[in-house]
Image (cartoon, rainbow, N blue to C red):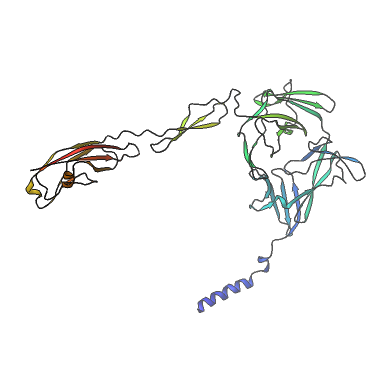
Amino acid sequence: MKKLISVLLAVMFVFSVMPFNAYAAPASVKAIEYTPSDPIVCYYETDGDGSWHTDGDGNQYFYYICITKGTGDVLTVIDNDDNRTDYVATYDEAKDSWYFVSADGDIINDSDVEMTDDQINNHFTIGTNNFFTVSYDGKSCQVQVEVRVNPVKSIEFIPAREKFVVENMGGEWRTDEEGNQFYSYYPPSFENGDVLKVTAGDGTVTVYTYREVNYNDSFYDESDNELLDNNELYNSKYSNDKWLKNTDNYYFVVYKQHSVTVKVAVIECNNPAGHTWDDGVVTTPASYTAAGVKTYTCTSCGKTKTESVPKLEKLGNPLSVKASAKNVKLKDIRKKNKTLKAISVKNAKGTVSYKVVGGNSKSKKALKLNAKTGKITVKKGTKKGTYKIKVKVSAAGNTQYKPLSKTVTVKVVVK
């Protein structure tokens, strides 16, 4: 007991001399910084999602959709001790949501980071003197937005052929706001022969065709000049769009924030003639107790279908039965029973059983059959004479062999 008390006192002493800040709450946020992974650029009065508005003084201004986050953006949190922690913006495709994560795995939820602007009072102008605000834990910082004069006036996209996606392929399953699952397709990629017509601000039209030049697939003009700033060319769609067969579905081709809609069909197979199935592979072998499965794959689109493989047909039971006549001396059964093996069974598949199915009452009384072994017992006191019974021998079969029964006549002569 004294030893236990001394240990407790030692522990209490250690806690009493520990510095107070060992248990202090984490340092609060002193300031934040926000660094986009790429500079945020809008094009003057042609931002793809922007629109014209009227401010409080009745003046029109163009509102730019510039508040955005991208994978790799960094939110830097600076505490009161001037410790800096970087949180990297990450997109969770499965949940269709963003979050910020540090190198130690600490997470800041997207809902805790607010992004706002005040374009109604501070209209964006050409140049870099434009900002939106990022706020976290009561602190805020500004993020620069550059507004450029768009060198492109308009675009036109002419696909080489009708765009399509194969049903339930080239995308991912999602859940809508009502909890229903739907298949969200990725927009079709560019392919050889697609044409992009770009009209510059001065009205000059340049035609670019998607093709290969020097082992590089891209849009080139007739002089093999590649489309400028092709990193600003992409296909896009709304993630909650539900593309269906036999309906009009659309996605967007976007270049320098100009966009055009492109019609896309949902089809069963990328072969216009329909699926071309291969010879199939047995993916689940059939057995004697259950059907199997054979899977076929379309050589055009990769879709699969299955069909049932019938259960294996059981084999005939090779049961062989033979009965032999037996002679018994009267003196051997005067005072005791006598057991005989009168039935021979070979090649039986499954459990064998025996049953008397015929014979006169005298024979049935004198002879007793063992249902499991098939042996015949001649009861003591049986008189001289000939005794006959019919015995059905049954083999129950198994997973591979069918059941089978055969009937033989057993003859016993008491002399």
